[in-house]
Length: 544
Image (tube, rainbow, N blue to C red):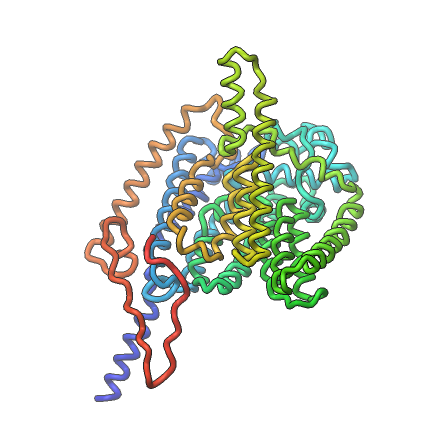
């Protein structure tokens, strides 16, 4: 009889362990990801000429672009809703039962990312510029002087897919990224499809570095690693713009976070191995995109603070990290044969007028006010003025954050995330994937519990503002309202089926549905005289 009871208890425990509260949300998100992959065949940032033309099945979505866009938008919405749904399940103790565990969250994120990793790129055509700029370097020309059209010709297969505005602009990226791209060009040559797949593999390596670093940084702030990974690495902005969009932010942020994690392990010795390696990785990240070099300042001042925070400690950190920067940039710049030409092309992205940039918006408004006031058209001058003021404001904020890090008021990762956020938000150009510079580091800081709602809402909104085509809808504006209307109908039907399946169901996923009253928070574990105090769960908030 006792044996039977024990066997029954084992069965109950194993059943509880097998239950995955995220499985319904996972299926919803997977449905959205598959719809996105299908829609990308007609609405993605496809190369020119489209290699799918003429194919019987795979070419069908490209023959009806409006329907393909609608399918893609429906998939985007389902992924975002499923991500928010699971995020709400993590509101108490993070990735701890009865909420989804860390392994279950990893399984979910992987299943959502896989269709996007196999589909054509979406949301941006930057990967085609990567291919062309690397090919310029491979042909022993200077990509920091020549644009793709001038260096390769307008009829070159690597130039045709680049938007017109970027065909005559030099590369704005650091030498390390072009060196990596030259290796890709050596394999793919003029094969655009193979080159895109190779760049996606490189982007996935960057995402893997982010996944490695985030939980380790989270533990420094006593945060739940599963929750941090869900908000940082499984964020729809990461899935859409790093995995699907293939932006080189994945490599930059990955190297930056790994460098910070290793560097923060360092001791007080000047030539500590962890400090040297962490600083080298951060410099490598800045050789992809220069703003990553900001992390070197926060790492150095955190190290100086641990040694006492005296002026000599700051000077020692500055001297050591400056020497590492010079030692790494010298072979990268001279070895590629382009010298420091990349430092003269950093303003290339500001050629566009970004509506998400506050300084650009104020400059355009100021120019229009001058026109209306009869002062003439001085929009370019006013725009330059406001952009300069924005950059100066960002510099002041970064200086204040560096000083706060030195004094121990904030930790280095929080300072880094806030500093990069200031650079992006006050800069002349803002894209949704630029915000990942700040959002991913901040996901692993002590500010996460207080600002999780804002992070969830901002990520959800920004995930849907960029069209999957990677281009505007000039001369085909009729497509967008038709596609959105069709997408809303599809979303309504899918959610209606999902809602019907949940009738009478119970569990953490059902409790997290909109309109449901949350269950009472678990009571604190009392101290016991018979044994040690139970470990407290990592810090999370009690709201979503």
